[in-house]
Image 1 (cartoon, rainbow, N blue to C red):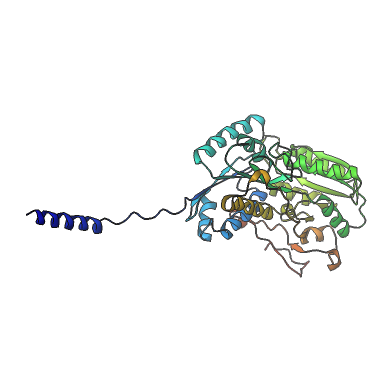
Image 2 (tube, rainbow, N blue to C red):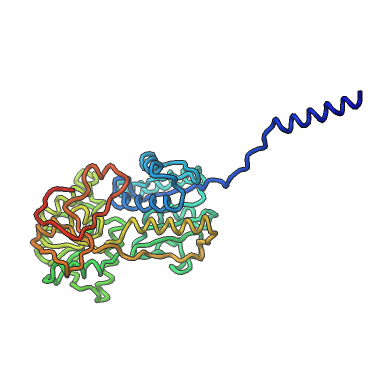
Length: 390
């Protein structure tokens, strides 16, 4: 009888062993990736940086496929096989007062803490200044992009070469001198120019960068005056007055202009007014060439974000330390010309000008405005008689 009990116990033990499967081995935890963007989804630069951000995440395996990129674009959040990715917007171009930015900072900071990110990406100056300082010297690594000219200015890094804290990233060089040199090739007779910008953090940074180069005497044309205002009527009157006084403009920024009722004027409406009323040539930023302005040596938003994700990957996967990871700036992008604007200004485009990207008209059509990014248009040939958008 005792032998029977032993047999029964052994039988039951074996049955239980075979009936209960072993617990599956846990894989590595998904990375929690958070992006805080300074602007809003329709902003030109935001769309271009979003394209680079998503391309890099796909390359490094944090997105599994392009369908997830579309889901992320539609919902600002997505879960993939390797990551949970989320985006928060500051909308600082349209909510730019101190009170509005303070309220936004509090709201975004709470959302960041609730998300519990493994890494924070900060898109552009306002996110860096307001959100970056909320998480300075925490255990969360922070990677920025799009800081204008000086990566040290918000106190997030000690030096460009050795950041010294939990923050590193990618900054914009501006390529103001290169853009004006390029403009000089298109319009060799110009000798003077003025800066035309809004009074946003980005606009002021561009203005200061150009004025610094002017004081250094390294620009190919002489800076005469600057207009920096968020009042669209004053911006327009300043432009109309100065075009009689100078040979060209550097149009630095116009995303924060407001009408007489305090409403933000869309980029497209500003660009349309400018093209219809200004009859001197201009250098500008690459995103504005896509809206119909003349030329730029592109300081690519795509490259800014792509480089930032590359840094983030080194931190997440290779154990890189932000405090010793030098900040950097990408090489400049294409020498860009808007064909329709050149034609309107009676500028004959030739191969000797060194043009690398031709943009036809205002390429940001309503269809593209609803997309997740802007497509670059490269061509070795142009048709100056073509007027339709493509």
